[in-house]
Each structure stands twice: as C-alpha cells, then as structure tokens.
Length: 468
Image (cartoon, rainbow, N blue to C red; front, side):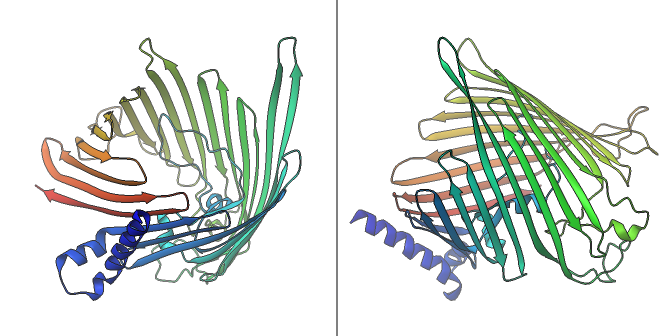
C-alpha cells in the first residue's frame, strides 16, 4: 500500500507541474513549472522506459531487449543522446579542459545510446537498434544503427571484440594474461545548414544545405597494464574534398603510477585554395587545423595513517597550423582523503604564443577544496584564486584585470533507502581584485523513490544572485 501511495504521489506532483501553466497566475505553480524536474523510470528484463518533465519540456525513451544464450537485440526510440562513435565524429579533437587527475579516453563501443541523460531534452526523436552475437570464447560481434527523422541523419556501425588469454604455468600458480582487441567501423550521413551571404564568417565560400558522409574507424587494445586506441575519421566538405583526422590515446600502469599520452592531428586538406578549407564535424562545428598533445602522470600511495595520497600533473599543448596561435597549459594537483575527509589542491597555468608577438601569460589559477562526510551530512568549501599577471619586459599580458577570487561553501544532507530525500545549499562570493562583484546562492531539493523495477524523483534547483 505504501508503494502505491508513493507512486501516486509522484504522479500527482508531476501532473501538477505540467498543469501549472494552465492554472492561475499564482506564483507557486509558476515557480514549480520553471524550476522543478520530474523523472520516472521503469526497468524489467524486457522493457526499460524513462520520462523526464521540466518547464514545458518532455523527454522520453523506451528500450526493448530480447536476449538469448548467444544473441541479444535492443530496439530503442525517444529523445536519445547518441554517444560512442557518433560523439567521436561530433568532437574528434582532445578536450582543452585539463585536470591533474584526468585519464585518457580509451574505449571503442560503436554507436551507443542513452535516453536517461539530462541532455535528452534538446534531442529530437530518434530510433536506435543494436544486435550482438557472443560465441563460447566470449568473442562478440556487434552491429548497430540509428535514424533521426527530424534531420534525416543516420549511421550504421559494426565491429567485434576479440579476447585472447595467455596462460602461463609456474610451479606455484597459474597466471592468465588477458588481452582484448576491439575494432569498429562507423559510417553515416549527417545534415548541415546553408551558409548564407549574411553569415558572420565572411572568409568562407557560400554553400547550400545538404548532407555530408562521415566515416570513423576505431581500434583499441587493452591489457592489464597497457591500453592503446587509434582513431581515424574521414569528413567531406560541401565542395567534395576529403579531410582525415587522427587521434591516438595510450595508458601505461606500473604499480601505483599511471602515464597517459594522447595526440590529435588535423593537417587540413593540403590545398592552397581557401575554398577547400571548409570542413566541419557532424554536429556543425568547424574543424580547425591543429596538433594537440596531452600528457598526464599520476601516482597514488598510502600514508602512515592509511590515508590515500594522490599526486598528478597534466601538460597540454595546442598548435594551430594556420592561425599560428599556440596554447600551452599545465595543471598540478594533490589529493589527500580517507573515508570522511578529502583535501584537494590544484594549480593551473595558461599561456598563448604567436610568432609575431611575445609570449602571453594568460592566467595562473589556484584552487583548494576541503570536504567532510558525517553520516548523511556533507560539508564542503572551495577557494578559487585566479591571477592575471601585469605586463613586464619578458611576458606580455593582454588582460587589464589583476586577479579574481571565488569562495564557496556548501552543505548537503541526504539519506538512503527505498524512499529518500536530499537537500543542498551553497554560497559563492565573486571578487574582482579587492572589490566584491556578486554573491550567488544555489539550492536544490529532491525526493526519490527506488524499487527494483521502478524509480521516481522530483527535484527542484534554483539560484539567487546579488550584485554589489
């Protein structure tokens, strides 16, 4: 009876949020309509369904899975977030955001979907299917595809996973070294919009809307201490010429130390005609001719008090091959934590360089964080300091600001169980130099109900900003 009452309560609240616009001008329904979010999920062996409701937006998804001893078929529809190879074709380059504890993204999964993602509100209706066959040696063959009626985008991916076990017999024990190989090929057609004569990008040649074919080949190898991925993407411009992009990511582990090395190469079309430099990814972002290199080194150890001490450093460089503006970034970090307390320290430095000007020291950032967990209560505080160096004889700084400071503190309470609730409030003070600019207060509330086959939640999130 309690379960029926809770489900009915969540359902009635969601209907109340949807009907708020039709109600009177009472501030409470309007406020809930703009800031409340309601989620429902049902999951069984055959069916998985999700509905999201938020501020005049509805997002949904359904998935049917038919499984046998060696075969598995999945059919999905709804506001689907496409990931895997599609995400790689949308953004083939390395992320310019760096962290001392970031890891290389070494995975090959073909086309995968997710309609439980909060980004699904902005996605059109799509259809997705995947079939896989697994033999007795756990080797697996995949084929997947999607179609979006709104823009008529579609793609098909096929690949396989191959496992090799190398058994080493010694006097004392038997050691099995497992190596996994993945190979996926994805191809599809993706729409692009027209570039009109009133476009802000006047240096490009005009073209009409249409479809561009795109192909992605991903291959990776994974062992216990070594992982590597190689990716090649092929794009075609509206004028018919082709462009290749290359990405390689590697991870090496020795005891408690890991080394991650990633590279991305886009050399352009090797054509002097600017008309043939019009390339964009499958989501419409312009592909810049560049070389990116990212190196990360991490080490984790135990202290005498059995705390976990983690150290990391990341180096990042981006060489622009045509605009000749190069970017260099560094990030250092320390983290000391146990079951209840976490201390973290980060520092970042950003540089940019043009051959016809001096080296520009853009900014230097320091961040310190401290968090506690006491039963169901979490408390955290952060201090974020960014310094913009003044101009001197050796380093040219183009910013007129000296430094900025952000200080925040947050308090969260969450209990666990079949029916749970959570709340969080945080305050952040923004300062420009020695003068306070604004203070931002964020708060959120949530109610959750979870059972084996059903999950429901209502969440409310908003903020208040006061400027000085």
